Length: 267
Image 1 (tube, rainbow, N blue to C red):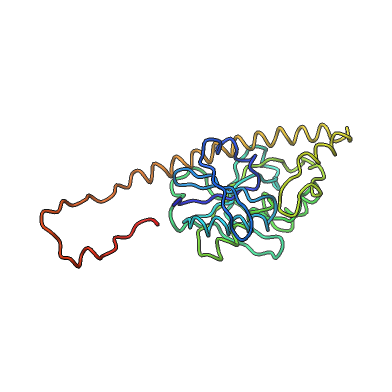
Image 2: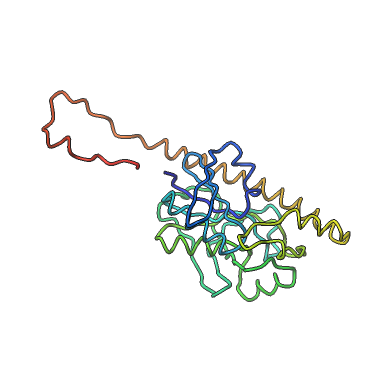
């Protein structure tokens, strides 16, 4: 079973990584989820928003029993020092719904030795935010970046006593005004791309902003995929370095009672 389960929002964020991975569809709690498996990692794309992320996190915990749960994907900058394509490793995740604050931990030691230091706070907010709201949220919560999912993943991890971590890539800086996108996110957290494209097509004033957003998203996706691939390789090397115990050669028959002992192993 994988050591690390990764919860992303949309498949397009990680598709550059998962194309050659093992793709598995499974049912959990009456919903279908798609999991991408390779080596020590499994990725599930649960959709946009806290509830969608929580559902996906619960599913991957129940079906894969990971040691560490990670929220990865895109985030908006709340700090002028963060630019598109920057990797943000928060030390804390704040849930704007109730103000709760979760500290990043790594009880299994799976992130030891990774480059970069955890810094600042990531705020999980319930909606896509514009420039003015970004400034207000930065002042109110003292956060450096904002997303829509991490707090949901953190809540699932805490409920099951699993280590939690987060890694985000900045896809829009502090002064970028996001297009109005809330109406194109359905109840399951899926983004209705065709409907959004039709909406933009009839509004020339949105063409340039949407093109910039698409370019920024592609850049952020490349950085995210590179980061996750390095992480996967590190986990694989760490796993390979742990040699299994030698198998003893038996020269004498064991007592009959010994044959009834269960040696254990992965189920």
